[in-house]
Length: 436
Ligand SMILES: *Cc1c(COP(=O)(O)O)cnc(C)c1O
Image (cartoon, rainbow, N blue to C red; front, top):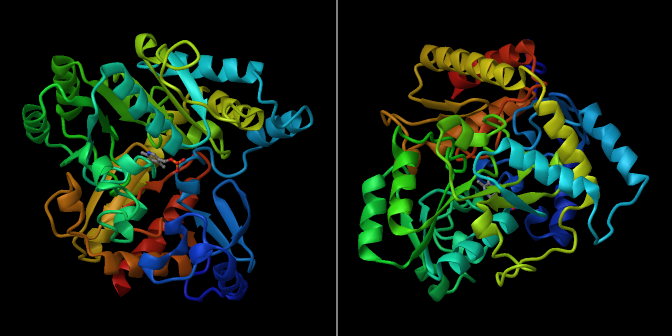
C-alpha cells in the first residue's frame, strides 16, 4: 500500500526555508541537483531518517530510493553505524595523526577489492579521482587521459569535460572556469565503444596516461558495460602501458564486496571509491597496484595530502558498514530485491503502454523514458523524455516516494527496503505512469 496515495503532500516549511536558503547559498543548495531544478519542483528539506524512510521538516514520511546518492546501502541511520560513531566521538574527532582505524580500513579494502594492494583515504570521491589521475600521469609521465561521455568522476577541472550527473542534468556542455589547456588533455569517447577507444590511442600515440571509467555507468542513469567492453579496456591499457582506472565511487561495495571488478572479473590498475565506504560521512579512497601507489608522497614524488583524510569518525562509520556488508547473504538479498523491483516496474510500464528502457545491475537501476531499443551510452540515454521523467518524479514524490531528481541518475535499493516497500513503490509507479 502506498503511503499517501491520492492526497497531495504539503511542503510549506520546505518552501519557506528554500526561499531563505537562496539568500545565503547559491541556488539554495550545496550541490546542484539537490535543487530539483530539472524536475520543476522545490527541494525537500529533511530532518531525520531511519531504515527505508526519511522525514522532511513538514512531517511528511517518504520511502527513499536515493539513499544519499549511494552510501545508504543498509538503509538510513543503521544502529550498527550509529553505535560505532557514538563510541568514537567520545574518544576524539580528528587528530591529524595516524589511528588504528585507518589501518583497519585500508586492510578491509585491500582484502575485499581485487585490484587494490595499497590504498589512501581522502574526503570525497572528487578528491579520489583527481588524485588517481595525477598519480597515473606521474607514473606514466604522460599527460592525456580518456574518459567516457556521460561519465561523472567528481568536479575537478579535467574530469568535468562531457560529464554526467548534475552536469548533464543542468545542460552544461562545457564548464566556464575549466581552461582550454586542461580540456585538451581530456579525450572523450562514447561508453561501450571499444573501437573509439582504440582510435583515440592511434591518434595519440604514447600520450595517454590513463583511462578512467565507471565499470557500470551510474551517472547517465545506469548503463551496464557490454560483454567484452571492460576486458577490451584492460587489453588496450596493457598494450599501451596505460593505467586503467575503475571509478567505483558508486559501484564499490554496492555490486558486491569486490565491487564491479569482482563482479565482472576485470582488474584495473587503480580504483577510486567513496560513497558507501564512508557509511554516510565524507570519504573517498584511491588504491591499486603497489608499484604505482608507492609513487605517492612521502615515499614517492607524486604529492597528495589532506587535513581530514582518514578522519576517525568517518573510518569508524565506514568500518562498521563494511562489517555489516561482510555478513553472509547481504548481496544475495540486494540482488533479489533489485530483481523483484525490476520485474514489478517492467510490468507496470508495459501495462501503462509507456516506452521505457529499464537497466539494472544488482541494487542500482534506471527507468529511461525512451523509445530507443536499448541504452548503451550517452547518445542513447539522451533520447529520454526528461519532461516525462520530471512528471513521474513529481507523481512519486506526492505519493511519498523519493527518487533521484534527474533522469540521469540511479535508483538505489537498500537492505532496509522490505518487499512491502517495493510493492508500494510499484503500486505508486503504476498510478504515476498512467497519468503521465
Ligand atoms: C559521486 C561520484 C563521484 C564524486 O564523489 P563526491 O564524493 O561527490 O565528490 C565520483 N565518481 C563517481 C562515479 C560518482 O558517482
